[in-house]
Image 1 (cartoon, rainbow, N blue to C red):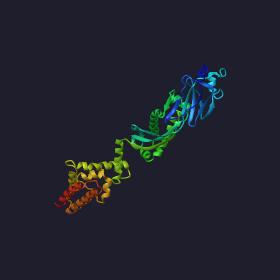
Image 2: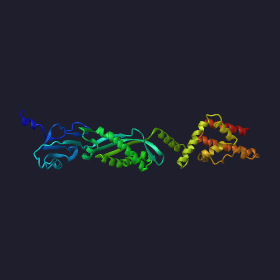
Image 3: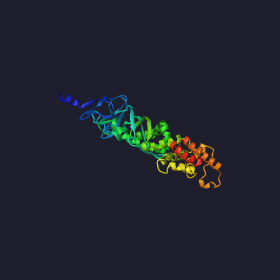
Image 4: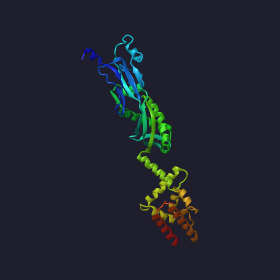
Length: 354
């Protein structure tokens, strides 16, 4: 092999990237000790961009096409290297190829709940999952901000950085949107649109374009979901009024009644009190005013202390019958158990019969 042939083999005549695998976004052409021959061919395929970097500075960017590398096609490098004086000299420059194909079906999700402000529930923690697609939109910016001088930069590496950007942007955009959680959960498209606008701007800072962003699910943390389920249950327990929070309070009072029956002096004691017209009527009328009003048209139970000592036997009999009717109304609405109803009824009948 002659010296001339050996020297000739040190020159690169064709620069191109034959993508053979998935997931590589940036690839550096292996230069080693080779130099690019003046007049060499550069092939940039569709969905690729080539970037020439001279001494750490981006010099020229080439879109898809075939190029013969001369002073005319490398104006920036020509100026940097004074090719007007060294026209026939080969040159060394790092050449990076970037894939501009859309990276589709990439999954995202919150590894930990994200805390945001909510108009209905004050501060809440939510978890969300979905799919997004992106691509390298500006190779120059992507090189300077993310990939740098590595031999290759993969999709997995960039997505490790994107995950933090995505979660921070999502928390900020949802917090500023003032959209109630119940609206977001019911309309995930609305949530996705709100996040996508801010996320697009965040991606652009790194030379990336966001092509698609979808939300497949959104949920509360387990403790908050349990509280929401209880609130929903309150609304389903018996039309406790238009005021939702008032209905929720009434439901909590009603839910506490079975617990009273488990303790000495609990609901059984309250049933006896009902027979003598003391305490139970007041507790139930305050805590379950809406339910008591629907139970019947009978007059409210008056405390025993308010009953004149001269009350006739017929009036007392009617009063106890009214109480029995009200007690039956509470049973029908599921606010007391059958056992509790039977105990209180027995007390009233004993009082009536004597």
